[in-house]
Length: 363
Image 1 (cartoon, rainbow, N blue to C red):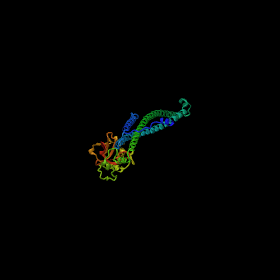
Image 2 (image 1 turned 45 degrees about the vertical axis):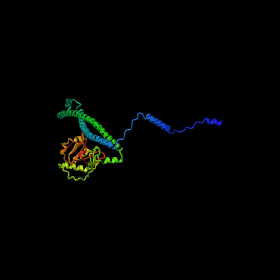
Image 3 (image 1 turned 90 degrees about the vertical axis):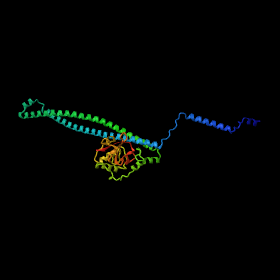
Image 4 (image 1 turned 180 degrees about the horizontal axis):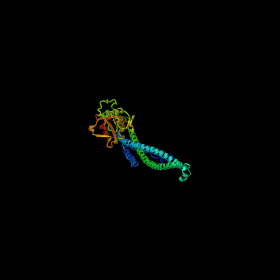
Protein backbone atom coordinates (compact mmCIF):
# COMPACT_ATOMS: atom_id res chain seq x y z
CA UNK A 1 0.00 0.00 0.00
CA UNK A 2 2.78 2.39 0.94
CA UNK A 3 4.62 1.41 -2.16
CA UNK A 4 1.54 2.18 -4.19
CA UNK A 5 1.23 5.68 -2.67
CA UNK A 6 4.94 6.39 -3.31
CA UNK A 7 4.64 5.43 -6.93
CA UNK A 8 1.54 7.53 -7.31
CA UNK A 9 3.48 10.70 -6.44
CA UNK A 10 6.27 10.09 -8.98
CA UNK A 11 6.45 12.53 -11.96
CA UNK A 12 5.87 10.84 -15.27
CA UNK A 13 9.09 10.44 -17.31
CA UNK A 14 9.26 13.02 -20.19
CA UNK A 15 9.99 11.59 -23.56
CA UNK A 16 12.16 13.50 -26.08
CA UNK A 17 10.50 14.95 -29.15
CA UNK A 18 10.93 12.93 -32.24
CA UNK A 19 9.91 13.35 -35.80
CA UNK A 20 7.80 16.42 -36.73
CA UNK A 21 7.50 17.43 -33.11
CA UNK A 22 11.27 17.69 -32.80
CA UNK A 23 11.53 19.86 -35.91
CA UNK A 24 8.78 22.18 -34.63
CA UNK A 25 10.53 22.62 -31.28
CA UNK A 26 13.88 23.40 -32.93
CA UNK A 27 12.28 26.01 -35.15
CA UNK A 28 10.64 27.71 -32.17
CA UNK A 29 13.94 27.70 -30.26
CA UNK A 30 15.87 29.29 -33.11
CA UNK A 31 13.19 31.93 -33.57
CA UNK A 32 13.34 32.79 -29.88
CA UNK A 33 17.12 33.06 -29.97
CA UNK A 34 17.00 35.36 -32.99
CA UNK A 35 14.40 37.55 -31.28
CA UNK A 36 16.58 37.79 -28.16
CA UNK A 37 19.66 38.63 -30.20
CA UNK A 38 17.91 41.41 -32.12
CA UNK A 39 16.53 42.81 -28.89
CA UNK A 40 19.87 42.95 -27.13
CA UNK A 41 21.66 44.35 -30.21
CA UNK A 42 19.04 46.92 -31.12
CA UNK A 43 20.57 50.22 -32.25
CA UNK A 44 24.13 48.87 -32.54
CA UNK A 45 25.76 50.08 -35.78
CA UNK A 46 27.55 47.49 -37.86
CA UNK A 47 31.33 47.66 -37.53
CA UNK A 48 33.02 49.62 -40.31
CA UNK A 49 35.31 47.53 -42.48
CA UNK A 50 39.02 48.04 -41.89
CA UNK A 51 40.64 50.26 -44.53
CA UNK A 52 42.47 48.47 -47.28
CA UNK A 53 46.24 48.73 -47.67
CA UNK A 54 45.71 51.03 -50.65
CA UNK A 55 43.49 53.34 -48.59
CA UNK A 56 46.06 53.42 -45.78
CA UNK A 57 48.84 54.28 -48.25
CA UNK A 58 46.73 57.05 -49.79
CA UNK A 59 46.03 58.56 -46.37
CA UNK A 60 49.71 58.32 -45.40
CA UNK A 61 50.58 60.10 -48.65
CA UNK A 62 48.20 62.94 -47.77
CA UNK A 63 49.65 63.22 -44.27
CA UNK A 64 53.20 63.39 -45.63
CA UNK A 65 52.16 66.08 -48.12
CA UNK A 66 50.40 68.07 -45.39
CA UNK A 67 53.50 67.72 -43.22
CA UNK A 68 55.61 69.10 -46.08
CA UNK A 69 53.27 72.08 -46.44
CA UNK A 70 53.62 72.70 -42.70
CA UNK A 71 57.40 72.29 -42.99
CA UNK A 72 57.68 75.09 -45.54
CA UNK A 73 55.54 77.31 -43.31
CA UNK A 74 57.81 76.38 -40.40
CA UNK A 75 60.89 77.28 -42.47
CA UNK A 76 59.39 80.67 -43.30
CA UNK A 77 58.43 81.31 -39.69
CA UNK A 78 61.90 80.27 -38.52
CA UNK A 79 63.51 82.71 -40.95
CA UNK A 80 61.31 85.52 -39.62
CA UNK A 81 61.99 84.46 -36.04
CA UNK A 82 65.73 84.60 -36.68
CA UNK A 83 65.39 88.08 -38.20
CA UNK A 84 63.29 89.27 -35.25
CA UNK A 85 65.83 87.83 -32.79
CA UNK A 86 68.64 89.64 -34.58
CA UNK A 87 66.66 92.90 -34.54
CA UNK A 88 66.00 92.61 -30.80
CA UNK A 89 69.67 91.85 -30.09
CA UNK A 90 70.82 94.77 -32.28
CA UNK A 91 68.48 97.17 -30.53
CA UNK A 92 69.58 95.90 -27.11
CA UNK A 93 73.22 96.53 -28.07
CA UNK A 94 72.36 100.00 -29.36
CA UNK A 95 70.47 100.84 -26.16
CA UNK A 96 73.45 99.68 -24.08
CA UNK A 97 75.87 101.85 -26.09
CA UNK A 98 73.60 104.86 -25.85
CA UNK A 99 73.19 104.32 -22.11
CA UNK A 100 76.98 104.18 -21.66
CA UNK A 101 77.36 107.48 -23.54
CA UNK A 102 74.56 108.99 -21.45
CA UNK A 103 76.20 107.90 -18.19
CA UNK A 104 79.51 109.44 -19.34
CA UNK A 105 77.76 112.74 -20.15
CA UNK A 106 75.96 112.70 -16.81
CA UNK A 107 79.23 112.10 -14.97
CA UNK A 108 80.86 114.99 -16.81
CA UNK A 109 77.90 117.24 -16.02
CA UNK A 110 78.03 116.23 -12.36
CA UNK A 111 81.75 117.03 -12.16
CA UNK A 112 81.17 120.45 -13.71
CA UNK A 113 78.33 121.22 -11.31
CA UNK A 114 80.47 120.22 -8.33
CA UNK A 115 83.35 122.41 -9.47
CA UNK A 116 81.02 125.36 -10.03
CA UNK A 117 79.50 124.95 -6.61
CA UNK A 118 82.92 125.02 -4.99
CA UNK A 119 84.13 128.07 -6.88
CA UNK A 120 80.90 129.99 -7.32
CA UNK A 121 79.61 130.36 -3.78
CA UNK A 122 80.47 134.13 -3.75
CA UNK A 123 79.04 136.75 -6.03
CA UNK A 124 81.49 137.38 -8.91
CA UNK A 125 81.71 141.11 -8.06
CA UNK A 126 82.69 140.31 -4.45
CA UNK A 127 85.24 137.78 -5.68
CA UNK A 128 86.71 140.45 -7.95
CA UNK A 129 86.89 142.95 -5.10
CA UNK A 130 88.61 140.52 -2.77
CA UNK A 131 90.96 139.18 -5.35
CA UNK A 132 94.62 140.08 -4.96
CA UNK A 133 95.05 139.47 -8.69
CA UNK A 134 92.13 140.96 -10.65
CA UNK A 135 93.64 139.95 -13.99
CA UNK A 136 93.80 136.34 -12.88
CA UNK A 137 90.20 136.48 -11.66
CA UNK A 138 88.95 137.89 -14.95
CA UNK A 139 90.72 135.09 -16.78
CA UNK A 140 89.01 132.53 -14.52
CA UNK A 141 85.67 134.26 -15.05
CA UNK A 142 86.02 133.95 -18.81
CA UNK A 143 86.81 130.27 -18.35
CA UNK A 144 83.65 129.87 -16.25
CA UNK A 145 81.63 131.50 -19.00
CA UNK A 146 83.02 129.00 -21.48
CA UNK A 147 82.30 126.22 -19.01
CA UNK A 148 78.72 127.45 -18.75
CA UNK A 149 78.36 127.26 -22.51
CA UNK A 150 79.80 123.73 -22.44
CA UNK A 151 77.41 122.78 -19.68
CA UNK A 152 74.42 124.06 -21.67
CA UNK A 153 75.60 122.07 -24.69
CA UNK A 154 76.07 118.98 -22.53
CA UNK A 155 72.58 119.34 -21.07
CA UNK A 156 71.15 119.61 -24.58
CA UNK A 157 73.11 116.51 -25.59
CA UNK A 158 71.80 114.58 -22.59
CA UNK A 159 68.23 115.50 -23.46
CA UNK A 160 68.78 114.26 -27.03
CA UNK A 161 70.35 111.07 -25.76
CA UNK A 162 67.46 110.41 -23.39
CA UNK A 163 65.01 110.89 -26.23
CA UNK A 164 67.05 108.60 -28.48
CA UNK A 165 67.20 105.87 -25.84
CA UNK A 166 63.42 106.10 -25.37
CA UNK A 167 62.93 105.62 -29.12
CA UNK A 168 65.30 102.65 -29.20
CA UNK A 169 63.53 101.02 -26.26
CA UNK A 170 60.14 101.56 -27.91
CA UNK A 171 61.42 99.87 -31.08
CA UNK A 172 62.89 97.06 -28.98
CA UNK A 173 59.51 96.55 -27.30
CA UNK A 174 57.79 96.30 -30.69
CA UNK A 175 60.39 93.87 -31.98
CA UNK A 176 60.09 91.80 -28.81
CA UNK A 177 56.33 91.52 -29.35
CA UNK A 178 56.94 90.52 -32.96
CA UNK A 179 59.47 87.94 -31.81
CA UNK A 180 56.95 86.41 -29.40
CA UNK A 181 54.43 86.17 -32.26
CA UNK A 182 57.03 84.54 -34.54
CA UNK A 183 57.90 81.98 -31.86
CA UNK A 184 54.22 81.17 -31.32
CA UNK A 185 53.83 80.68 -35.08
CA UNK A 186 56.92 78.49 -35.09
CA UNK A 187 55.51 76.31 -32.31
CA UNK A 188 52.20 75.98 -34.16
CA UNK A 189 53.85 74.71 -37.35
CA UNK A 190 56.23 72.47 -35.41
CA UNK A 191 53.28 70.87 -33.62
CA UNK A 192 51.41 70.41 -36.92
CA UNK A 193 54.39 68.67 -38.50
CA UNK A 194 54.95 66.33 -35.58
CA UNK A 195 51.25 65.48 -35.34
CA UNK A 196 50.96 64.60 -39.03
CA UNK A 197 54.14 62.54 -39.03
CA UNK A 198 53.01 60.68 -35.90
CA UNK A 199 49.65 59.96 -37.54
CA UNK A 200 51.41 58.72 -40.68
CA UNK A 201 53.63 56.38 -38.68
CA UNK A 202 50.59 55.11 -36.79
CA UNK A 203 48.79 54.31 -40.04
CA UNK A 204 51.84 52.58 -41.48
CA UNK A 205 51.96 50.43 -38.36
CA UNK A 206 48.54 48.98 -39.30
CA UNK A 207 50.00 47.50 -42.49
CA UNK A 208 51.63 44.11 -42.59
CA UNK A 209 55.41 43.95 -42.73
CA UNK A 210 55.25 43.06 -46.41
CA UNK A 211 52.91 45.98 -47.17
CA UNK A 212 55.13 48.42 -45.29
CA UNK A 213 58.20 47.13 -47.11
CA UNK A 214 56.46 47.58 -50.45
CA UNK A 215 55.48 51.11 -49.49
CA UNK A 216 59.00 52.03 -48.40
CA UNK A 217 60.48 50.56 -51.58
CA UNK A 218 58.36 52.77 -53.76
CA UNK A 219 60.17 55.81 -55.09
CA UNK A 220 59.05 58.94 -53.36
CA UNK A 221 56.18 57.23 -51.59
CA UNK A 222 53.43 59.76 -51.20
CA UNK A 223 54.16 61.26 -54.61
CA UNK A 224 52.77 58.49 -56.76
CA UNK A 225 55.99 56.72 -57.74
CA UNK A 226 55.59 53.81 -60.12
CA UNK A 227 58.03 51.17 -61.40
CA UNK A 228 59.81 53.60 -63.70
CA UNK A 229 60.09 56.06 -60.84
CA UNK A 230 61.59 53.42 -58.57
CA UNK A 231 64.30 52.73 -61.12
CA UNK A 232 65.18 56.44 -61.31
CA UNK A 233 64.99 56.87 -57.56
CA UNK A 234 67.58 54.21 -56.91
CA UNK A 235 70.07 55.67 -59.37
CA UNK A 236 73.59 55.38 -58.02
CA UNK A 237 75.28 58.54 -56.79
CA UNK A 238 78.12 57.68 -59.16
CA UNK A 239 76.00 58.90 -62.09
CA UNK A 240 78.51 60.55 -64.49
CA UNK A 241 78.36 64.25 -63.79
CA UNK A 242 80.19 65.21 -66.94
CA UNK A 243 77.17 64.05 -68.93
CA UNK A 244 74.98 66.73 -67.33
CA UNK A 245 74.86 69.59 -69.80
CA UNK A 246 74.48 72.47 -67.38
CA UNK A 247 74.12 75.89 -69.03
CA UNK A 248 76.93 77.45 -66.99
CA UNK A 249 79.55 76.61 -64.36
CA UNK A 250 77.40 77.75 -61.43
CA UNK A 251 74.49 75.51 -62.44
CA UNK A 252 76.98 72.65 -62.90
CA UNK A 253 78.28 73.15 -59.35
CA UNK A 254 74.73 73.18 -57.96
CA UNK A 255 73.90 69.94 -59.79
CA UNK A 256 77.17 68.36 -58.63
CA UNK A 257 76.35 69.22 -55.03
CA UNK A 258 72.90 67.65 -55.36
CA UNK A 259 74.44 64.48 -56.79
CA UNK A 260 76.72 64.35 -53.77
CA UNK A 261 73.72 64.60 -51.44
CA UNK A 262 71.97 61.52 -52.88
CA UNK A 263 71.24 59.03 -50.12
CA UNK A 264 71.30 61.57 -47.29
CA UNK A 265 68.18 61.55 -45.12
CA UNK A 266 65.21 63.87 -45.27
CA UNK A 267 64.81 65.80 -42.01
CA UNK A 268 62.27 68.60 -41.87
CA UNK A 269 63.86 71.98 -41.27
CA UNK A 270 67.34 70.71 -42.24
CA UNK A 271 69.68 72.53 -44.63
CA UNK A 272 72.63 70.13 -44.55
CA UNK A 273 75.30 69.06 -44.63
CA UNK A 274 74.11 65.67 -43.32
CA UNK A 275 70.34 65.96 -43.87
CA UNK A 276 67.94 68.12 -45.87
CA UNK A 277 64.33 68.98 -46.47
CA UNK A 278 63.30 69.83 -50.04
CA UNK A 279 64.00 73.57 -50.02
CA UNK A 280 66.99 73.05 -47.73
CA UNK A 281 68.58 70.88 -50.42
CA UNK A 282 68.07 73.37 -53.25
CA UNK A 283 69.27 76.23 -51.05
CA UNK A 284 72.42 74.30 -50.09
CA UNK A 285 73.08 73.23 -53.70
CA UNK A 286 73.05 76.80 -54.97
CA UNK A 287 74.96 78.00 -51.91
CA UNK A 288 77.75 75.66 -53.05
CA UNK A 289 77.65 77.51 -56.37
CA UNK A 290 78.02 80.86 -54.60
CA UNK A 291 74.36 81.91 -54.86
CA UNK A 292 72.19 82.72 -51.86
CA UNK A 293 68.61 81.49 -52.21
CA UNK A 294 65.68 82.23 -49.89
CA UNK A 295 64.72 79.48 -47.46
CA UNK A 296 61.25 78.39 -48.54
CA UNK A 297 59.67 76.93 -51.68
CA UNK A 298 57.24 79.81 -52.03
CA UNK A 299 60.06 82.37 -51.92
CA UNK A 300 62.54 80.36 -54.01
CA UNK A 301 60.14 80.33 -56.93
CA UNK A 302 60.59 84.12 -57.17
CA UNK A 303 64.38 83.95 -56.83
CA UNK A 304 65.04 83.79 -60.54
CA UNK A 305 63.57 83.98 -64.01
CA UNK A 306 60.44 81.90 -64.54
CA UNK A 307 60.84 79.27 -67.26
CA UNK A 308 58.35 76.91 -68.85
CA UNK A 309 58.53 73.16 -68.51
CA UNK A 310 59.69 72.85 -72.12
CA UNK A 311 62.60 75.26 -71.46
CA UNK A 312 64.04 73.44 -68.43
CA UNK A 313 67.83 73.18 -68.13
CA UNK A 314 70.03 71.51 -65.47
CA UNK A 315 70.19 73.61 -62.32
CA UNK A 316 66.67 75.02 -62.67
CA UNK A 317 64.38 74.85 -59.65
CA UNK A 318 61.24 72.82 -60.30
CA UNK A 319 58.18 73.30 -58.09
CA UNK A 320 55.13 71.14 -57.42
CA UNK A 321 51.57 71.33 -56.11
CA UNK A 322 49.29 74.33 -56.24
CA UNK A 323 50.62 75.67 -52.95
CA UNK A 324 54.25 75.51 -54.17
CA UNK A 325 55.01 73.12 -51.32
CA UNK A 326 57.76 71.01 -52.92
CA UNK A 327 60.91 71.79 -54.91
CA UNK A 328 63.63 69.83 -56.63
CA UNK A 329 66.75 70.57 -58.68
CA UNK A 330 66.36 69.71 -62.37
CA UNK A 331 69.26 67.67 -63.81
CA UNK A 332 68.04 67.09 -67.37
CA UNK A 333 66.21 64.32 -69.17
CA UNK A 334 62.99 64.93 -67.27
CA UNK A 335 64.74 64.08 -63.98
CA UNK A 336 65.40 65.97 -60.79
CA UNK A 337 67.23 65.43 -57.51
CA UNK A 338 65.09 66.16 -54.47
CA UNK A 339 64.50 65.37 -50.80
CA UNK A 340 61.09 63.65 -50.85
CA UNK A 341 59.84 63.06 -47.30
CA UNK A 342 60.78 61.48 -43.94
CA UNK A 343 62.00 57.95 -44.56
CA UNK A 344 62.83 58.67 -48.21
CA UNK A 345 66.39 59.97 -48.67
CA UNK A 346 67.61 62.40 -51.28
CA UNK A 347 67.24 60.75 -54.69
CA UNK A 348 66.77 61.11 -58.41
CA UNK A 349 63.15 61.07 -59.58
CA UNK A 350 61.15 62.05 -62.66
CA UNK A 351 59.44 65.42 -62.50
CA UNK A 352 56.32 63.79 -63.94
CA UNK A 353 55.43 62.04 -60.71
CA UNK A 354 54.04 65.16 -59.00
CA UNK A 355 51.72 67.98 -60.12
CA UNK A 356 54.08 70.45 -61.82
CA UNK A 357 53.56 74.03 -60.62
CA UNK A 358 56.37 75.99 -62.24
CA UNK A 359 60.11 76.46 -62.58
CA UNK A 360 62.68 79.17 -61.99
CA UNK A 361 66.16 79.68 -63.39
CA UNK A 362 68.48 81.09 -60.77
CA UNK A 363 69.96 84.39 -61.91
